[in-house]
Image (cartoon, rainbow, N blue to C red; front, side, top):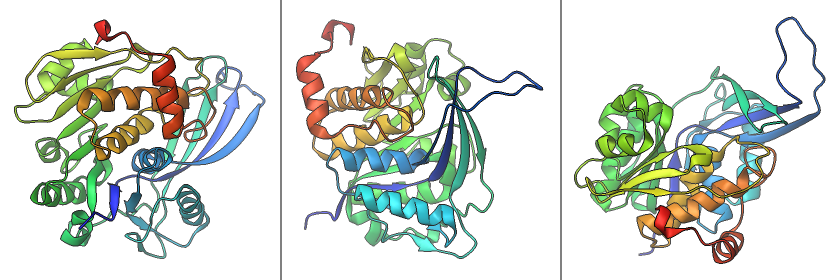
Length: 310
């Protein structure tokens, strides 16, 4: 029987209030806000929206409440076609809430995040039936124990696990050993490996039998190892005008998972993810610039990557 979802995600969802500034304020100063914008965010939240924009049937496992932030999150998911039937509701629960300062001159951002009221799903709530209903499982490190349980069940059903990890928290070291496609930024990779170059980070992180280990480095592109301890390859980033990098890594993860669900191999999935993340940074907010599948295909056709650089 065909799985109900292409990509099932478990992890952080957030409501992001973005403030756009011409620079950053100095201490004890005032600065005018140029633009205000509220969007959904979060590692899992934005990854699932990216997957859905690219045509994947996406769903979210998590705990939400009846407050304004939860209602906003559910409305955003509904508008994007992300299925929230696996969500458990608890009156006092809410998503993460972030205020994000975006420097309009550089596209760089500073995130001020609150986890007040966040309730993480319990491992016992992750049922075999839920995991059996997906082609690809996406997890992040904010829900370590529950993500670990989900990953174990995914392996029983033969579904690949894609992970976004940013820091070592409960369950994350064990989770790393069960991830098929590990995608991390240079900050996390450097802390884990002690290496100072992305290529060496990817080489040290890659594990035998692992489908892929990918280290992303923003506008420098990414470095990856496919199939365990093989050759480290580099994929260049898109050449675009950066407006806002908020959510760029999350979009990369979601697009990569969507490509896997379509049957793409690691190299092709990296190209899709690179384009989706690259086009996202050309628009403000974490989600506004996420492209659809036709846009990604058109970009790849019109702007082929230099395969010698991979």
